[in-house]
Image (tube, rainbow, N blue to C red; front, side, top):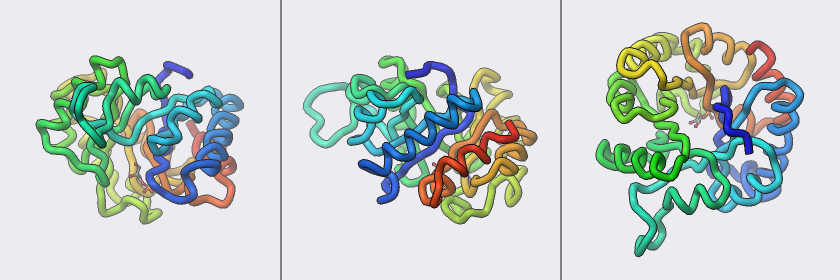
Length: 224
Ligand code: G3P
């Protein structure tokens, strides 16, 4: 597993094209593109696929969520330590499709940090990005919910949200890396997001639902 921070993270969500053998197929493509281009690309599979993917592939693996609880009597909860021991190097927190309260975001970031998991806190607007920056996660991923899964790139449809989030976050803590997400699917989108100040991108459907994920991944990193 690489410990370097990724510039691209692929969230497999719960898409049927993104679990089991399909998750392995995408992970293999991710590893190939990463090795051939030198761009670090992470993957956030479903919980059941964290362990096999982290065993088989040399790519950073992220959980899609953790709960703000320690190991113990918490049936059905996702514990940071368990995610770490399954082979993940980090976790998404507060994804648009798995929102948490502010208190739970803080608790989840703390739980991840105690376990040395990288933290990627997802946000929906500039003020939420600024609020999340106070918790000093490794990454903040700004994703306007209305563009998620539409194929309409945040980098062209809402460039201000990227620029303004980057400024708001870096003003609070310049070490936090900002990812842009929603509708990203091409190298041109990635280039635009980086020009707007983002450190990288978080995306899902553009890769997971592609006929040939490897081709999309090569294009995605082609202008970095
Ligand atoms: O976590 C990534 C995500 O919410 C963006 O989804 O399908 O618009 O790339 P998508």
